[in-house]
Length: 341
Length: 297
Image (tube, rainbow over all chains, first blue to last red; front, side, top):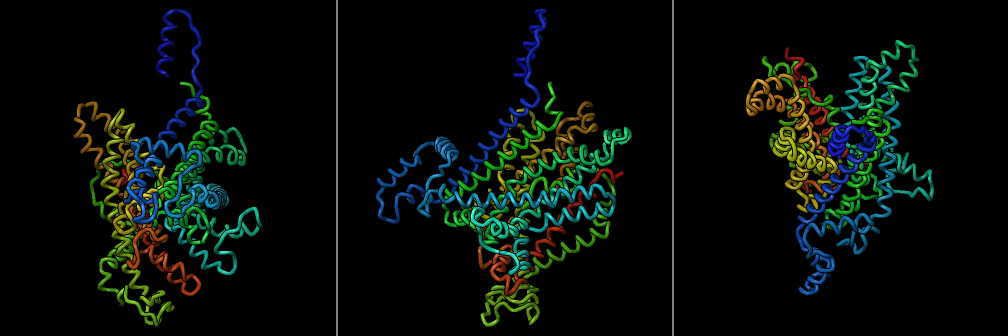
């Protein structure tokens, strides 16, 4: 496209009449390439999931047709046709993805229920837990990083590195157990209360799980944002601003924070998938009725529509969040927004 | 189960390219007090795991139902579990399985991730695009989540855990190796070598490979750490190593049922994981420092 335009450009120039050629502004091109990449990644990842699920031994048509030896070969064949399992693999994949995007994940092989019905409420719990964990990460990680960037020095560096290493080294599900040991009898350590019923009780039940899940991400936010702040504060334009007498507060809050936050945002977006994966484990520690229980049961009983649906949801959330981050980046970063090449 | 960029940050940013240096790397590697402590811890843990059958005071699988959930001390260093089994002995054997899974996963990730990363970094055009997109797809599937899917297909167990973790972390290593190769290709000395007519294979052997090895070693210590946590996470929910075989994750899972009566059952294996991980990450830092070009001159 760009090549085409520039060739036209050369052509008109030779013809003598210089008409301005429209080129999409930077953010439109950024949007286009982000969308295209997100699409490719989403298709690829869901295809991998689809293929992996096909590796599960056993014939789904036979399992779904009915229990044990009571089914005839004809019934199995009919089920196979009904489910489209006699179609080529790529057709099956396409049918599955398009149905999944409409919220139709088929029927569970074990629980005798529609997968979308099984997912419904559990997805809400997992989403809430992930969201609160994110809040924990931002509320702890960001202010701490700003303080650390304000007071730089050898000791601060050492502490920051220690915090970062510990953040990776302490698994969320073990932190969950420690919190349960420490707060038994003080705060609720198991079970779930819907937000609509009793908000205070809901938050009390989610507090420890969110802390367990969010602390690791908080250390990551701390590390990234601190590094970004220190980097920006040492750059030329900050020195120039200082020389021009811009107030220290304004430099810190307006210039440095805004620039440092972009990479932090990207890292947080990349962590969304990992966070949801961790949520599955933390839910198990706190007996929260989220997707974690469902997916573990699904894996153990080889209930592929259930496992497939859970992974699909996580992949789609990951891709969408990262796409939105890309777009936000394109809008916020003037270098991308205004670039025309 | 933190991955990718967490790891890059933990390792102190993207790996620095390095020139082939001389001098005692080993001395630089364990030159600081921190590194001496860290490598000692790693050596002790590895020795304990290897010699577990020799040094364990009790058989880790023998039940003693009259002495269940004993507190630490009382003839059992870390107490006993809900079946009266000696927790310290179980911890030694757990370390053995977890380290075995860590080593096998790391080797597997290296075998898959390095070739893919090299090809993506070295090739141009369609090959680069295809391999890079494959890496992107791998990164969009969180390691634990992909592992869950594979375990559904393969069935739970040590072998499946290793395969699932290799699949989960290979894309991560491939991406890092690719970026190191790209970085080195742009170095001036590589550029001038190319311009003066040094054949590509010679550039690869002389410049690219040595640099990639240094950076990759650092990342492999991280992969090892991820594998240990990954095993623990999968086993914690019953999808990794199957009972009664002891692994760090299994011990956590069993201990999670007795947080009130015997918190030590959940604390000890978790603490072992954390010590092992901090040692691995700090050792990775040390390797990075030792292979840093700025310290070569």
